[in-house]
Length: 399
Image (cartoon, rainbow, N blue to C red):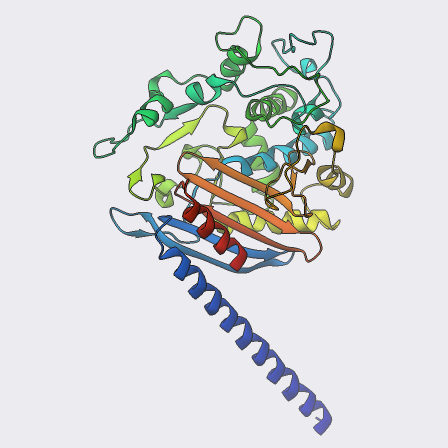
């Protein structure tokens, strides 16, 4: 072996060790910085990660998944993530289109066992694409919140300090109805809860964020494919990406690591579920969600594995223009409502991703298409004050 070759190997090892040490020091510094912010006690527990298309660069859990028993919040801790779930609906729609089971520009009534018509525009057909871009004119009326959240059965509610608002929000577990029944009641002419279910704007014209519209898209996937939405996404998204700790239904996954959710740092919430689970009920942890975000970055760059290049182009293509917005958010770079793909959001600065919020949960997932770096944060605590908001974005910016 020549001296030059030995020198080269030695130099390579030296450089590799130096880079490895620098990366380790950076991770330690980041962990310390986040711990300092966490010690303000604005949230009980959360997990974060930084990823690129090759995998996870940094991940960690902070605080507690259950304050009462001092159980740590780790990267294995699972919880629901709110509206970040909607990005899975977009992937599922495009997979169903690839399989020839639907087309984005099909009218929704082609797949529904009941009629959904905006009474202000009875001649206008609502399309699947309009659901996916929040331009369907379907709105979230008062019954979306009051009828959608149900207590999970067989849980001990003793010791929980439920506020009046909580008691009004969570319906008894024995009165839950199917997604089909909920949508019929909210969206059809003779439905019990159809008050203010449609806007005064013509379908396809104005962006109006709609959870009900998202749930309807999930139901259409079921009708078009003959499979439940949760099973369809498991087959075509979760299993290929080896997201083994994730799912839509508690009975399908190991709930041992499920986090308690909190209305605020001192008020735990009961365990609940959503009837309209496709719009916000995905249960996961930062480990699995990091795999998903890495796949999305790959897909954006034409290297994805769960959709074709053509489908990913459609998924990430900004679908709307200035005329589709009454008001565009240019204050928060991490608001996904500046433009939209197929249930995929865009911030005004070019970040791609989605935010999520539900009782006791806050989540955010974005990547920068210029650097191919993505960030995730999942919290088990709501916050409503300026200090909590500042702490949230201080952590996000530290990542």
